[in-house]
Image (cartoon, rainbow, N blue to C red):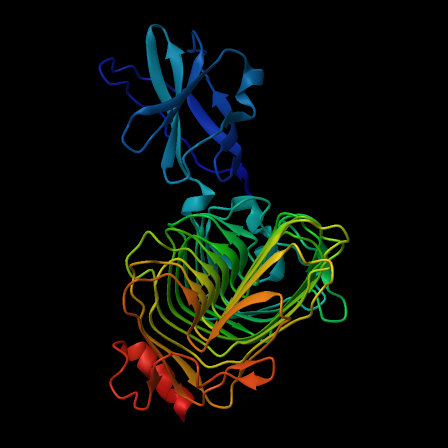
Length: 513
């Protein structure tokens, strides 16, 4: 909150009331003005040298179009202090007008205009100023220099959702370390309709390998934001480097973990994740979604020009799980791609993320039912919609050992070099490639697993031809046996003019060098 102390505006005197033409020497002066995100609080000093006032003093709050927003009548001098107007629209500029009753006339004796904090541009130069953004969660912020949080205690600056604008101007926020987890964990925590752009995040640590953080309730975790909840949110021109997420979850509800965001409903463009690790240990049956960029991409979201180079590790060490259904979605870019409502919702993405999955369900004695569904893919674990122009050139490793208590459990695993499972019947993926240059797909499972694995789609129910394939070194090892020859995926020997996007072609050419 920005505090304005003292006299803010000298108020205009000797004003004629339209139609009445009343002259007066009465003046009103504003002081102790406090402007916040959605309120204006102030005091007035009324000077009436000729004792002209015959009735109440009225304070009117006017909108920019001249209509009345609120009105207060003041009958005692004690009421002149701490006059407040709350619940205001932070997109508007307001004018406060003060009238005195003189005879039968209401005479204007002072006015002042105020811009709520959300309409101001606030420049950030210190870590303290960054953390103080909670005082105006819909403000417009500009970062004017790099910020180093070494030895600065950090928690997300937002106690509620951020709906403002943050322009990093290409500067770097570095050495942020979390000491505790929250429901929405990330640099910006919880973002609604906000815009975050032009920012580098370096050396952000949400837990460490030596000391992972723990949550026993539902969580959404991302280095930029845990949760981006609005389809109008914009995330653009963001780079995340040399960072890590290490935590364990015993939640029976969910754990969504993405290098950029846990759950994402907005618009993401031009985002890079490099040299970053994500490791999650789960001990219960809560839904798991992990992604090199986003864990859950929701219905109206978009993802464009996103590339990830992350180490993604998921370890399941179940603690006496009995008669439960488990769902695990892990992808090099997206854990669960459910952006089904927009055309071309995901295009121009690439990943070199290595994915490692170790599964010990810890199924309890006397278990009589259960469904364990696992989806692991180079681009997306589970995809309900299509992707245009993308490639994956990382390695996938999945290991699972049999538990004697799982005789009555249905275990279905889907592993693919592009998608674990593609679940859209009619949509077409175009120009998707799994590129191998010594990268491997290596799956080790017990004989009670219903396994579907491929260098492209582990499983699908589509009825239309997909423009997808593999290029370079092939790899599909299942229980130490190569299944390359039985893999029906299309093999490309020439990628000239294959992609229809200049952006993805440039990225692919760099990988080939």
